[in-house]
Image (cartoon, rainbow, N blue to C red):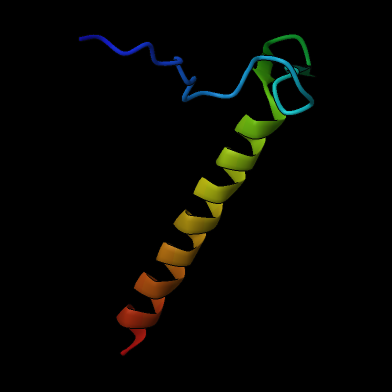
Length: 70
């Protein structure tokens, strides 16, 4: 006996405002010898995740600094 089951996606669909990738390019030059270039492409959901990780890192650093002062 087999039952037909619908397949439920665990990941959100690729459509929507949080799945549209954003792109940024930057170039920096000092004089003739030094130049640096950076390029990043990330979705708004990825930016939220990065912001959350940075927040947790800063919170952890504050706890370590407070413990070191004791």
